Length: 102
Image (cartoon, rainbow, N blue to C red):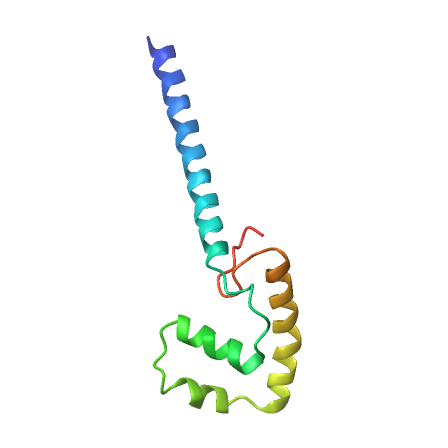
């Protein structure tokens, strides 16, 4: 009897893991369908601005934060952001929501 209970417990645990994995994959797929990465790269300031908006920052704060970034900083960020945008577009990923399992 205990052996059967162990087997049942293992089956339930395996089903649970499979369901969790399926749920994660579905969420990732849904995010990729909603992804803004299919749009062309808007430029560094616009990408940062959109990121701030998605994080819930007040609209009137965003221009102040962007103005605090020097042109050379924007140039440095731009190179990396443009590569990130391209990578996400090619792999159909959401630019603003990364998955640490990549």
